[in-house]
Image 1 (cartoon, helix red, strand yellow):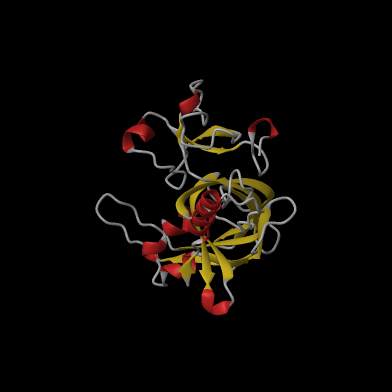
Image 2 (spheres, helix red, strand yellow):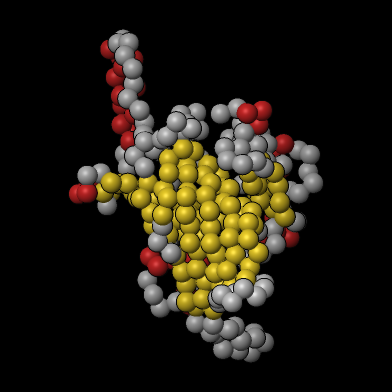
Length: 258
């Protein structure tokens, strides 16, 4: 597969139009996705965790976490497009799994063009999983039990409007850990941005200067574990920094700006 070069092509087309002084309708950009390992996703629970027999259990994913989101184009298959998602909750366990890292990545087919609401759909994905081996106790470090974790994403929709191309997405997640399964709605945005819970300063509360699009409606949540890391330094963690999440259903914008 090769990376999509549509953004470069659009720059060239736009420049050519200005030089020629022509007045004609530009071609649609298609489905653009910000390729990056620093997206940040919030998971809103839909169904509480339970075992296969219906009994209650307690294993759940992080409240929010960093995810990698990438789009690929395969010119050998009619320019078919693929969307991949790799959650931090799997990547952090990858070293304890003998399987290749590709198993930790959810892979699905992405639409070529946005729909009437400016969303690009990827309805089905492969299951991303890790079978993490047990780690024996060493010195003062306690033993870590083996665990199996899987993420099954579905109905992912990337918001790809021209003003904010491919910087927010939503969808569904079925999370399973050691047989305990729960389901969620995903709200994610790019880039991951640190914040300080309770701050009224715009740059520290997911506003202007935070690194996010200033039109985004976003809010700050506390960090509660390693997976909830949005480029936080050790000092920021010590100072109680958290991470920005979309505060509305996707697309999450202030004053309905899109």
